[in-house]
Amino acid sequence: MNRLLRILNPVHILNAGRYSSRGFRYMIREERAFQQELIFTAVGVPLAIWLGDSGVESALLIGSLLLAMLVEVLNSAIESVVDRVSLERSELSGRAKDLGSFAVMIALINVVVVWALVLLG
Image (cartoon, rainbow, N blue to C red; front, side, top):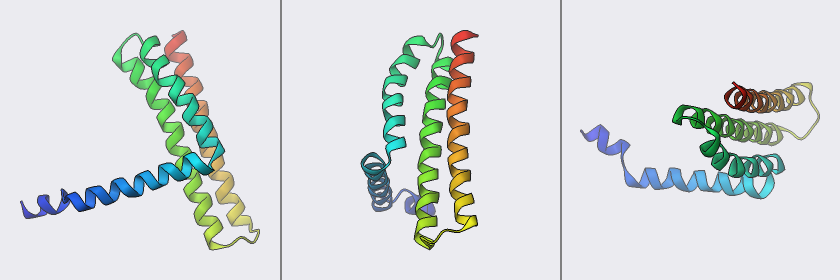
């Protein structure tokens, strides 16, 4: 019971929320790709609810959009860490950034595939 109370400590929960909102504000303010994905998501969520024939279809459509945003956040985190370590050009740093970008591309392809399969299938 004591462990549960430590896990549910309101101070920890509030701090986590504060850190998350700082990250969200940074992404909105600084990351153009995230801004674009946020606009697509803001348009896509109501469309997904309207176009999905079931809750499962709507969830798949919305989930694919949220996954793309999640991968964009992780890509930005990778880029920040790489830049923090060194601003010098490095093959490994470039590879890390390229792989993060590739992960975003896969997530965006996933959006297209999921939406096509749900809406055309």
